[in-house]
Length: 279
Image (cartoon, rainbow, N blue to C red; front, side, top):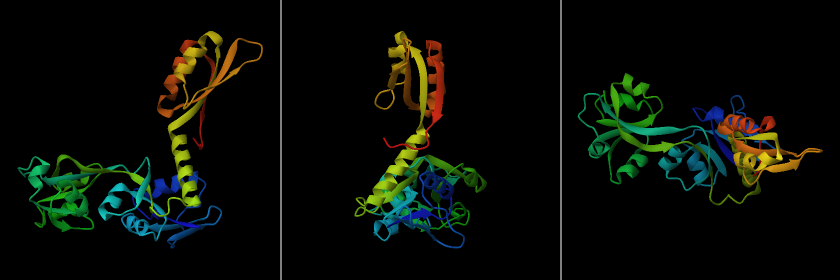
C-alpha cells in the first residue's frame, strides 16, 4: 500500500478531489480527519497543506503527492514531477506602490522584498536578497513600511490594486498543479497505476471520439480530417461503397471537424465523450 498526499484546502483542493474520483479512487476528505484509506486500490491518502507536501514526498515519508510546482520549487524538494495537471495555474509577480518610480524587475534586486517564496525569488535574481518572509497577507507589508516591494502569487490582481500596488515586469515564476513522486518510489506498482489512471483521464478530457459514414471517393479526405492518434478505424459498410470511420479528435476542434465532414459529404456523424483511456 502506498501513501499519497493531497491538498487539504485552497484552489487545488476541489479539482484534485474531482480528478481522483474520476480515476476510481476513494479520495474524499473525511470530516475532521486527515487520512482516507482506499483499500481497494492499495492507497492511503493524506490531506496536508500544499506547501508541506513537497517535504513529505521529498523525504520519502509519502510516496507521491499532488501540489503546486511553486511549492515544490520553494521547498527545494528532490521530489520528481511526473505529470503536469490542467488546473491551479498561477503566476508569481513583483509589485510596488503605485507612486514608486520602479519600472523593471532589475531595479528591485537591491530592495527589501516581502514574500512567502524567498527561494524562488533568489533563484530568479541569482543573488542573496533582503527579505521579509511572511506566511500570508504579503500585500500589506509595503504600507506598513517593512518592505519596498512584494513578490506574491497573483490571480486577478484585485487584491494588489486594493492595496495600492501595481505589478512590475513579467512574472518571475509560473505554476500549476502537478503529481510528484519520491525518486525512490517511482517503480512501485501502485504509483504506476496512479500515473496511468491520471494520464488516461487527462486524455479523456482533451479528446472526443467521432464516428461517421462516408462514400469511398471521400474516404481519403475524411481520414485526413480525422487522422486519430495513430490512424482512424475504417470499416466497409454492407452492400454499399461507403465506409464507417472512427477516430479520436481534439475536444476543442471536434465541432469544427464535424462541420467540415458534413460539408465534404460525410453523414451520420456522431460525437462521443471519452470517460477514460489508456494510450
